[in-house]
View 1 (cartoon, helix red, strand yellow):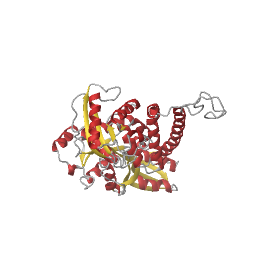
View 2 (cartoon, one colour; view 1 turned 30 degrees about the vertical axis):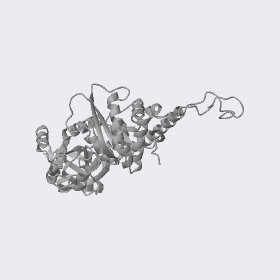
View 3 (cartoon, rainbow, N blue to C red; view 1 turned 120 degrees about the vertical axis):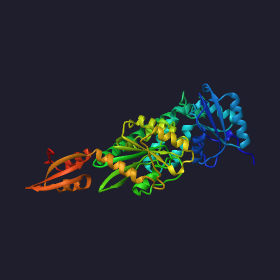
View 4 (tube, rainbow, N blue to C red; view 1 turned 60 degrees about the horizontal axis):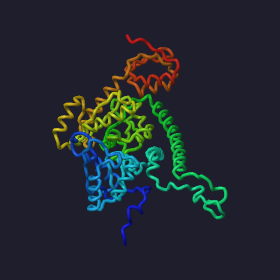
Amino acid sequence: MAKPSFADQSRDDFSVVRERALLVGVLLGGDPIGDPLAELSELTESAGADVVDSVLQRRRSYDPATCVGKGKLEEIRQRSDVHDANVVIFDNDLSPTQIREIEKAVQRKVIDRSELILDIFASRARTAEARLQVELAQLEYTAPRLRGMWTHLERIAGAGGGGGAGAVGGIGTRGPGERQIEIDRRLVGKRIAMLKEKLAAIDRRRTREVLARKEFFQVSLVGYTNAGKSTLMNTLTGAKAKAADRLFMTLDTLTRKWELGHGRAVLLSDTVGFIRDLPHHLVASFKATLEEAIHADLLLHVVDASSPDALEQINAVDTVLTELGADGKQTILLLNKIDAVEDQSVLTVLRKQHLDALEISAARGTNIDHLTEEVDAIMQGHMQRLRLSIPIASGKALNFLERYADVLSQEYVDTRVIVDVRIPPRALEHLHTLARDIQHIDVA
């Protein structure tokens, strides 16, 4: 049976399950550090494809028509034939025209970096919120590319242009008509508007939820994808979050109570992992999910210390945090997977450049007690020493103090309780909503 030609395959049917992928990277400037296609290879395998070969080209600028030069394009086609690759994946973002021209030359489906990441997110989305976020990102990626992706630009109303009886379309449909691409754009635009409205409602609800937890000191895990955030979450809170050696295992925010000891606790949230050149559509779509990092009191930046690209990954995360407006947050840098480090030179550089970093192993529990102590100390540093006079009848306020503050002493004077406490500012705000008649007494 004859093998179907590329022309018989549809670009709409994007499934990389067990496909054979040839990777292509176009580098501008000097020599890269490490393997420039290592991350793309991991992304491709996470999407379910087998990497059969890779091609690199160094250029002064991208070719406007095909990104790579003509000679390299022919090499890609030949190597795709040799390895029977059925998809070519670029580590660069391509324009619709470039995709079309490359596909025409290599006779294979061509996917760029952003489309690959979007596909992985789509396969990982489990909740209704995550699916909405991924769909919005995919549509915003696709919308400006409709002209380059669609080829059926014939008029669907008034097609054929005939005026006699039996003409295509019939009475009432003849005329200048409307191109399919215009209909598609209108439908995509309506869907994008609807998704943004739904996600805006989710964003408002999540913001309310975050602010409603203001009596707690809030800590958020951030870091490069596959740095071990979910494993650390499980170690610290027993959350039983799904953790695996795969990129983007976590798309939905998970928040759990982390007991620090001595009756103190914080709320710990795990967020979606970051990556180099994370598509802006994803950052925008997942803004509601990333609200935890924006509103957190403290960030735990988890780094895979065993990765040769650890320094570049730290910079990538810092870039995304800056885009989110969370770059000024107090942060503890955690060098995770310290037990798996093979290249000690990388660890030496990390130690020199980040003197305050804490070395841990989330999987083995190494230095977790030190991390807990450091977070506890930071939380207490945020606490205020106050002497308060509270009505005895305000049972809710007194119970709240027992749960969310350090009560150093208390005495009963007539109908009031005089308490000496250390309390976080957020908890103090909430305390005043529980009892109006709270008086502040100067500490001697």
